[in-house]
Amino acid sequence: MAAIRNQAQLQQAIEQIQNLCRAIDSLRTDIFPKNPKNFAIMAEGPVDEMRKLQADIDAYIQHLETSGNSVGG
Image (cartoon, rainbow, N blue to C red; front, side, top):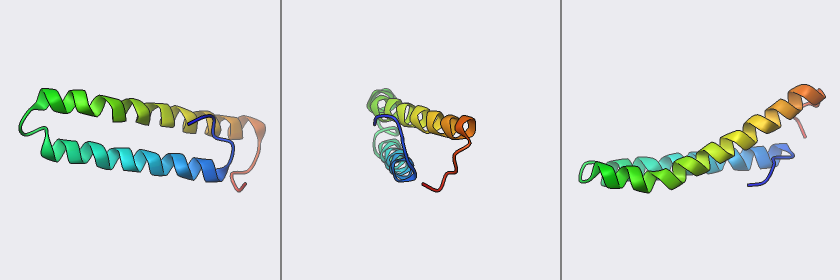
């Protein structure tokens, strides 16, 4: 996702993180008990994407704090 510019994009990023958490939880349930190494490899992509989304959220919040804009828009 590119830079977050409004509340709708913020909501979308949050929902994407939630979906990625569910995907990792599914991998944890299905893969981890059988092969922890495969779990780690398979979870790497979703974890990286979560980090990117979190960085976008952090940047958006930082922008709001420094610009004095409200979060309503």
